[in-house]
Length: 130
Image (cartoon, rainbow, N blue to C red; front, side, top):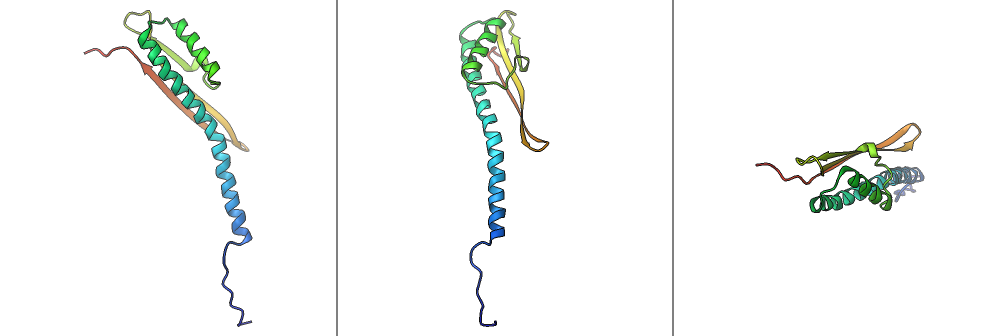
């Protein structure tokens, strides 16, 4: 028995199970978080295009609401609800110059645990006073 001195090489079955469990856990986290951030980057893209739109045109609150709704529908943005958007009028009190979107996304993770993402984006096109 003393003659058999084999050094173990590689991983045992238990260590493979642990490694695969860790990979599965992190893959699950990524699969839950990635869609939230993809949607958020879609919101950022829409906000950037709306900033250009607001700078070039004087739009009323209703016109801005309609433009946002159309862009959210074509961009497959479902987490942002109308109550998550705040429109502010500028000094002329007619056209919208500031838009704030503040929303939260909850995705189920495991059992009673959820992953929560809180996102905030705003644009302000009113020139600053000196």
